[in-house]
Image (cartoon, rainbow, N blue to C red; front, side, top):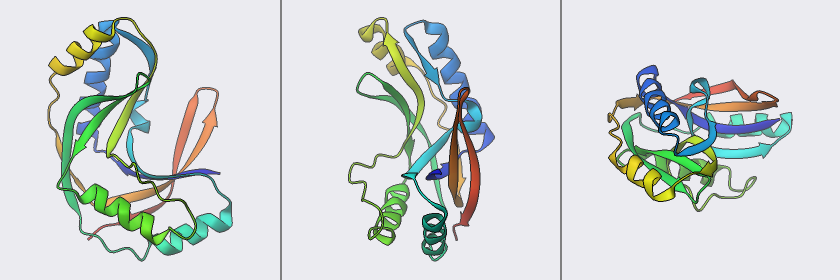
Length: 176
């Protein structure tokens, strides 16, 4: 199974991202696949293909993590190259700390992600019609900095279908 760890967003934050995605679609400045609202999440760690035995081991390790709940908010838009459009998630460094703890705990079993950047992918871009105009548009686009609490992260399974990925929660891990 394909698996990953994620922080899910509350409906209010998802609604704001949907509003921003709709404005980007209507701008006609790019063509691509926008992430479905139900699939929006921040990936803490991507495992790729794992077997049941590995999933059990991951669960056993992660259930021992003690970490304080924290707040974060939606930030600005950004790009990874010309193919990924993302939204920044602003916090006090807690997301990176949680990621690093997870990486350390699982370091004997999975490679560490040294390039982690807390963000949420909102679109995979196929074509940009006018790069300069798109950058200007995204810089001017006002994003409501919806604040939300993170009191849990989830161990998710990803099933690839012709319609796109379908995510299913395997386990939830509460923060203090």
